[in-house]
Image (tube, rainbow, N blue to C red; front, side):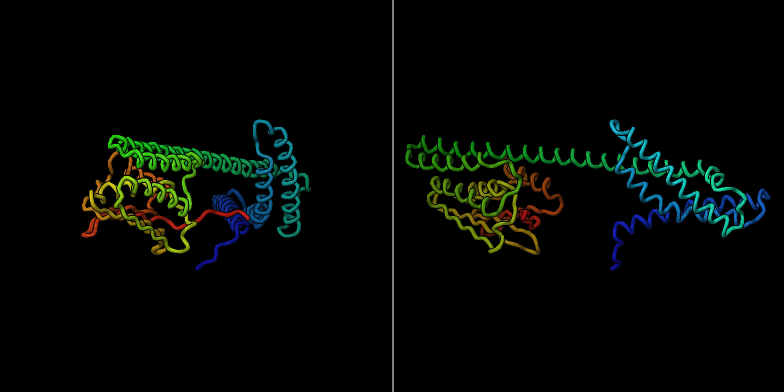
Length: 350
């Protein structure tokens, strides 16, 4: 594979290429004027075109750095104007010295004094200098606009994700309290109290959350296991199996991403006499794989009912785009929901 150039060399190559094009265009213009009979062919006519390439290549990089350091902003433009006036003066002196020396020693056309030579090219040199400053200013405005656009898109994405996340919490709590009220109506006060204590514990966990979109697998499973203990109060015959591949406990997953899947597994996989919910977390082809399966024979609708699965699908698409997948399938042994997403961990700052 081709090794890319370091950033500084790449910038130098771009600047050299631009000034080479400028020099060639100027040389072409002189050639056309010679062909028309306006000038007598002499090598000295091409001196400005030849010298401009190395001289302005060397001048451009410091002028760009100066433009970044002293941009023309509302509050700082007087300082920027003074700095660039001094920069232009130095550029004129440097270009004048090099071109005057070249004309006298190499091209044999040293009829003008140094100051006459400097004045002769002062307009075009000032035009070159201002063009460099304008190009850097335009580039900075473009990058600033891109940054603002990116920040606005990120803020919108975070707001949409938080909205989806906040939808899920009341949805989860509503279902839990609805189950408790059902137990109270059935007269099973002890089960209702046990379930209420479990919901209270879960509520403390949810309120303690700082709104982070991604949490470690171990934290997500801790919440889900507490939720399933509540469901086991409601369904005493519910069997739960949680299998976690070693090494993925600290991998990041969307907060509360498993709860709608487990809720659907309980809804469709538990009947009056039996029920089983299996949770499997592992890796597959450098992807994190989350599977929730049940022993039921009913496949949930792809969009879910209410918030549930549609919320899950929307959050995954918003967080990972096309890098994730979410599939529902049914077999003779029951229904399975599988999520695959990029395997990544929290960045730990040392």
